[in-house]
Image 1 (spheres, rainbow, N blue to C red):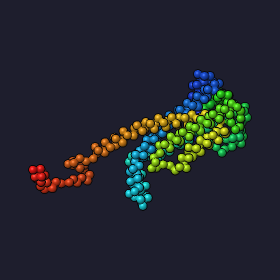
Image 2: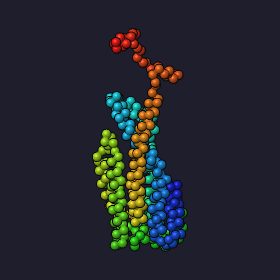
Image 3: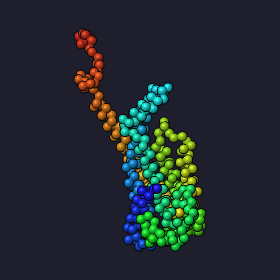
Image 4: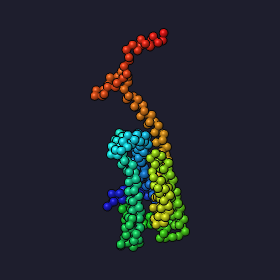
Length: 314
């Protein structure tokens, strides 16, 4: 059903592994580690325009907050009118709700695809490759080693099954194959992923507008419950998935840091340009109105005003 996502993700992973295997050797575990890391970099770089659009939209919404509050006060008892006016204001400034959802949707599909592709290297267990799905007829180790995995041929499957990171097989699961090497590698990756998740959430919360902050319970979830879930859930994930999780969260943390600094430096310039544009578009005294525009009423001098002024100075 999701082959339209599985094949492109596996193709990018295959390209990076082929490139690093040419340098380090086809049986190198480091080639697979680097392939996963660079797969994350490739996919996140491709989705960066969506993330940048989301951050700029958030900055615009923050600048519009005083006008939004004014609209709420203007229509306190007319909720439909209030919502309509706020949406109209947001449309005028190019604010799109969909822009904020696309990055999350894209990352979710990528994670699901990568999880499925990497789990499909080992089809010998009854655990399915998708959440809450069982495999009634698992393969034998011999069948699995001879069965291609999307764009990977049988030789690639065998190479992945033999690949290790500091002595821990990339396909190993801490809960199913406990050992000193697997525990050390998986435990380290779980702690790093939890820390990256926590600090990523902290950076996002620091960007919230105090006047429109999220509810405290949601902040508590992102700060503490989700990182704890990484620590607990990591025990049932393969080492290679934990490696992807760390790489992805580290990318998110760095991306937020540099992008937020860029947007913060850009925001004052945008506000100044908006103010300059409003000043230029304001009608000048004595100027004729544009066709179809309502004339601007100006105060007329009182008769004898100039004469009275001159007499007052004498």
